[in-house]
Image 1 (tube, helix red, strand yellow):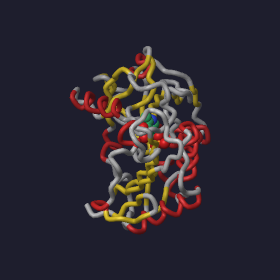
Image 2 (cartoon, rainbow, N blue to C red; image 1 turned 60 degrees about the horizontal axis):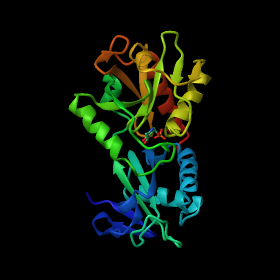
Image 3 (cartoon, rainbow, N blue to C red; image 1 turned 180 degrees about the vertical axis):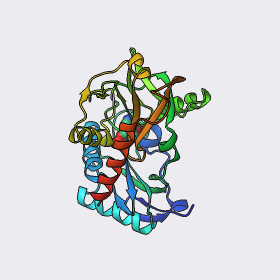
Length: 284
Ligand code: PLP
């Protein structure tokens, strides 16, 4: 690929963008990231991603070298420079290079990186078939609300799910689903109630999750934010995940058990359609 990427104020060909081996993002996973969806060359849910980025940085005492306005400018410019119509923008901020020491450096010089990935996010064949998920223990750290680049366990979970023949993993803590490996997890009960785990340090505060819950309420769907068990998930009428690039994606099998009739649920598909329509309309 021949993308133009952003690195610490410079626009570079991807092959020319280099980061120090002493970067704390590399040595300690001392970095946070964001992923913003792009459709028709416009940013989806930018305000939410920008707010969560500020929150993640605040939790770790990281300081972004750019103001929020400048960061928005870089997002717009990277779309233009790469003629990106559909896909995503990945942003990462690390505490930067410093001699290896567990203590944070006194005067960090953060590393800020952005790159694009072109991807057909709208026409996802999995939206028509649904995905299967394997249930795996949630072995991540206790601050999953911070969007850090510490993604080894989610990678391992995806590998294990694939080994079991599933598309993704849903993570389980003490018999209750926390979230998917890289998405929020939701079910719809036989009474038509949307159930999703409440916000806490155990899950990432999904931007798509937030909008979909609002949307569900707007169209008269009851929403319950409470933990749901593995049993409840397996016997739900519908199940789905939400994330910036999957939007609303049906889950039709959990640990080999068909959900409903094994087809994407009607409410799930309605939420997907409405979500996409509204977020494209309000993209910037
Ligand atoms: N939960 C986890 C663990 C994630 O990694 C992600 C996205 O990367 C999400 C949930 C969904 O968040 P969002 O809707 O903001 O993309």
